[in-house]
Image (tube, rainbow, N blue to C red; front, side):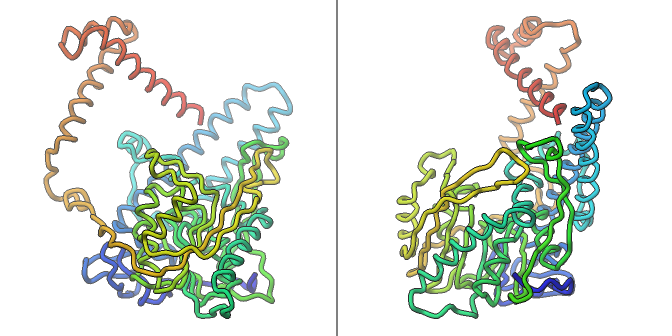
Length: 474
C-alpha cells in the first residue's frame, strides 16, 4: 500500500484530456476551470469534489442522486422514530440496550452521510413525498446505500477477500503477458469500481501509470476519493445478522492502511459515469477490468462486451472476475461461462486465461451471515475490433430542458386513464363501503363487470397495503 500522508490528493480534472471523452459522442473533452466540455454536443460536465461527473445527462443524473440521498436520510429518520417508539414501549433490559444502540446509530449515520455527501447539495432535488409520488426511487440494487457492505469490506475489515481478489487479477494479468515484462506505462480502467479499494490495490501493484475507477454511485465515489486522499471517515455498519447486541450497529472508521514502502496513488482517478456509456475516447486503455459487473449490470453481456472492446487498444486485455451469477429477465442472457467466452470471441476477443477459486465474500466479523463464493477470473485479449455499438440517445429537449410542450403520446394517455380510475376508487373508500360495494359501483359506471372489478380491486388494495406496510416498517 502507498504513503500515508494526508497530502495525497487528486486534483479536479487531473486526468489527461486525451483519454476523457464525451459519454454521448466520445469526442475528446476540453478541460475548464470547474468543468469539462464537449464542443460537439455543446455540453458541460461538472465535477463533484474533484470527481468528473460524465453521465450523458450529468445535471439530471446528479439531481436524481441527490433526491435518492434525501430519500435515504428520510428513511433513516423513520427508522430513528420507530426505534424511539419501540424503546419507550419495551420493558426488557437487553432489548432496551439494543434499541438504544440502534437509536444512536441512526442519528450518527444521518450526520456522517450529510458530511460525506454534502457536495451533492449543489444540485436541485425535491421533497420526499413528491419523490415517492413520481417514482424517483430506483430498484434496490441502484440505491444510494445498497452497496454499503462493500464500503466496510473495502476500508475496514475485508483484508482477506480484498487481497484474494487483487491477487487473482494480478495472476491473470501476469499469465496473459507470458514472458513479457510488466508494462509500467499501463493505462487501466476499472468498470464498476465500487468504493475503490480494488482499484487502489491494483494501481499500486501493477504498477499502472494511470488508473480510472468508474462507478455510477456518488456515495461510493466520494468515499473512495476521500480515503485515497488520506482522510478518515466514519459510517455505521448495520450487519445483516448481528452476532451479539453490540454488533447490532457498529460505528466504523474508513481509512486506507498503507505501507510507506509501496507506491502512492498518483495517477488514480475516480469518474462518476454509466458503465454502458463510459466517457473515454475509443482505444484508450491497455486493460479494462470488470469486477462483479458482467452478470449484474442491467443490460445483457451482448451489449456490454463490444463496448469493452472499443475501450481497449489493439492487443489490449479484458480481465473479468466475479461469481458469474447471471439473473436477467431474459433467459437467453443468463449466460454460462462457455456462452460468455463464445460471445467474447464473436466480438473480437480471444481467451488467454481462466481460473476459479473459493473466497470469502462480504464476511463481516460482526455478522453471522457470511458467504463463500467461487471467484471466476478470466482474461481475453483483443484481436479485432467489435461491431459498432449504438450511440447514446439523449433525452428529448421537452424532457431534459422542460421548456417545450409535452407530446401527448399513447403511454401518457393510458397512464392518465389509469390514474383517473385509481383516484375514483380512492374517493369511494370512506370507511363504510366494502370491496363488493365498490365493485358494484365500478360495474354501474361500466368500467368493468362486477366479478372482474372485485378481483382487480382486491389486487389493487393488496398492493397498497403491502407498500404501506413496507414504508411503516422502515
